[in-house]
Image 1 (cartoon, helix red, strand yellow):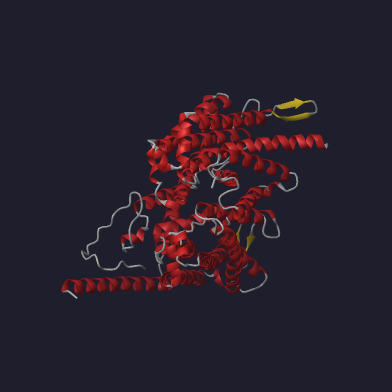
Image 2: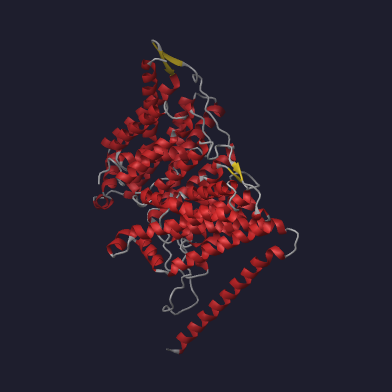
Length: 288
Length: 341
């Protein structure tokens, strides 16, 4: 393999990983910004989205990319229900919330394990093995679709948060909950919106990953730690930082994947997380 | 002192004597159990051995997470390191008990630099960093065949392969860990840890040496978790990184400590009993079923009884959960000091 092809492969894999990481972390950091809660169950919501997509695609026999729409809708409903039944009771427990959310992770992943078993599953798509040819370079078509979709979602959500009234409310609450409430913003409903967006984007990300990589009920922890890495590197609650950090982590992993054996590539993310937290406990791009 | 107050004091005294009596009788039964002859003896002994190992593990989380509210998700790292160091010792020909003790001390020493890294972060960030550390150990042990690799390793047969000896080893571990937690709870260190748990910045302002208190507690906590891991390894006689470094052990420790009563020295024992009962009854039904129940019970306890099951028995300050059940006491006098165990 010549260097040009290698560089192209690394670049494409880097962009592919980065876009997924950014999408995954968006919800996590949005939720943290608005309600100061670190959602340890985020990874298992992603896996839930993956299984929802698998069921829709196989049982209804529709194209998995079209199935993404009902899946995102379903995850939004799941988000609404979990907020009503669970999240809104965990605001005043302080740091102990990590235990609540870890317990939620256990519940979701073990319900999935009871229904679907522990085997790794994979969402079949009709163009799963087709390649895109660019002269001498080639790349799997499905990865390009996935990258494009997740980048589009990231851009869409960013624009929504930046310009819509709801988005402005979300940013106001994440800057200062008290001031926002004085100005007449209902912080509970804003938190609910943020939670629903976060869970729906996690589910969408899980479905997109499921189109490329196999997943199992317990695979959420790996996604979770990677999302934490990106979130912490970018500064919890900062959208711009998340995008930069997502690309740093994605590109680094893609680059190191040619030097290191594949079993220990996850260690890179963990080492980044530890170094980042030791140097700047609030995150590299945090507002404070 | 008015007559009613004297009566109240005597009532509390009598109640204390009665609880002591119950504990002494239970203790004697537990001590004598291996000498009794009944049909399910082997099974009961092995379940109780697990209960004692889990008590030690839960207690190691309790002295850090229960007193100082440092919610670690990394105790699986200490548990696994303890198990593997004990196994390495046994393979080098060191007697099992000696290698267990050496493993405990080594892991406690290793915990010091790790603690310096972890304690640079606070609150949820501390939890994330401990989670990442535990995963790093799991991946490294899976990767290097000289450490164990994915095949895992077996422990040679030793003195503790006999069930009765194993039972007493685990019992001594559990009793020792409860004693350590009890002593910490009474000492100045316990007071510092509780104040760190209430408000870390304020305690630092008031002159509590926060980093020292946390590091010395992590030192003991890591040693305790390593002893639990080593005992587990000797009992199971087969170790694999995916098992002993599994994040499930960190979760077990949290469950055992919080459900029993975080910050109480007998809490983890109650938690470990409940945990083992759940595991024994539900795990054969379907894989993962007991974890589903553990998660649900954990959430229910955090919402309804944030001070754990033992708070039904002992009065332990205020209940501060969102839906906490207010425990109505029979004693009408407000003046009687809350009992801290």
